[in-house]
Length: 257
Image (tube, rainbow, N blue to C red; front, side, top):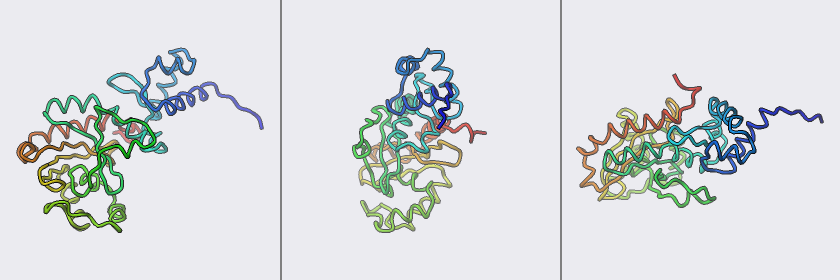
């Protein structure tokens, strides 16, 4: 079989493979050195890959990671680590402004995984097992994540495992989850108090990486005597603005506008 060569395509694919192997954000100098390319050559190929969504350039530190197009075929750990890195600076500033730690949440079965962007994710094979977990139906972040998933999908999650009543306030049925989902979709956020733990409260909002598509949430959890309904109302605009900005940075340009 004839061997066809395309120098530009070969180099672009090599850059994608390099970012995949390294599994961490890399600077232009690191990438060029690792691939034996001139910096201007590497920059040109990366610019094309960024424009098409296969590579993402972080607006904060200028480092490169795999982009949203790769997410469609990449493993979940890579996706979560990249999003965590992209959101880090914004989340830290928001946390400082509101006086509470903000975290990312991701739905894993019937549990919500809590991801602290300040710490990032160790890209080991068991990375997801080390993340804090909460029963999704009983916490604000999980309830937001469930609300923006298809009902058939949510039904499949709880078909053989009915939602457990962790406290007297916990939603106890699929019907209760769906009713709550309708409320979240209408209001665009969720504040709960004492549903996961009698002494804690949480506030969560959806994070849209593409218009109409939410697979992540941003949330705050704190003692209920501190995160009161009035305090949650003060924090909500900051959390919504943060979700909008993080989502904008992660947005697929093909779906923009």
